[in-house]
Amino acid sequence: MPVHLDHPFLNLARERVVILDGGMGTSLHRYKPAEKDWGYSPTGKSLMNLSDALVYTHPDWIAEIHRGFFAAGCDGVETNTFNANAIGLGEFGMADQLDEINRLNIRIAKQVAAEFRTPDRPRFVIGSVGPGTKMPSLTDPAIYVDFDTLADAYRAQLRAMIEERVDAILVETCFDILEAKCVAIAAIEEMKRAGVRLP
Image 1 (tube, rainbow, N blue to C red):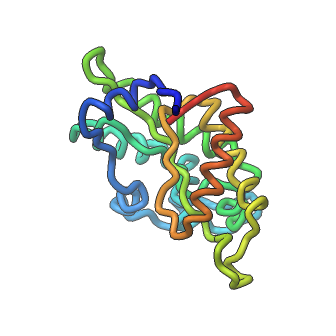
Image 2 (image 1 turned 120 degrees about the horizontal axis):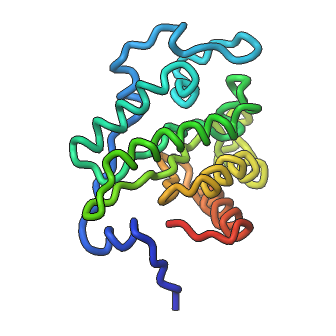
């Protein structure tokens, strides 16, 4: 028999539908960012369309988006970390900033959630883990990645989320079910290492 996880996010979800936010990437594009807004990697590579890295140049945009979703009535917001795994950031030359990018984005979401949280109305921060650009089920060498390499690419991101105590981890928008399974297994393993259980 599965052990019942007593967690405020799950407890609320057992009572009613829990409403999360909309797309962070599309919301950021409303600001019409120019190349200078996206910034550059330490090697000078443009970070255009790497929404996660806007935490360096426009943390105000990220916070404002979170505030807008909470003001509209959302119970939770997703962190701006959709691409913030080793493979995704590595393609932009930003793998060395993985831990910092995740933690800064998580902290912005947590700060805004705290602004809206009341004793009668909890607000939640959901760790967003996106699909990346490599998939273990495909044989095309441009896209293929083996299971263990993929799991390792997500571990540091998952550790940051666990250590920063997001309210839940969302493995989202995966096109490859084996990829989703890989990330879920890595998340469970990292939670066991930390002695923490999150939804």
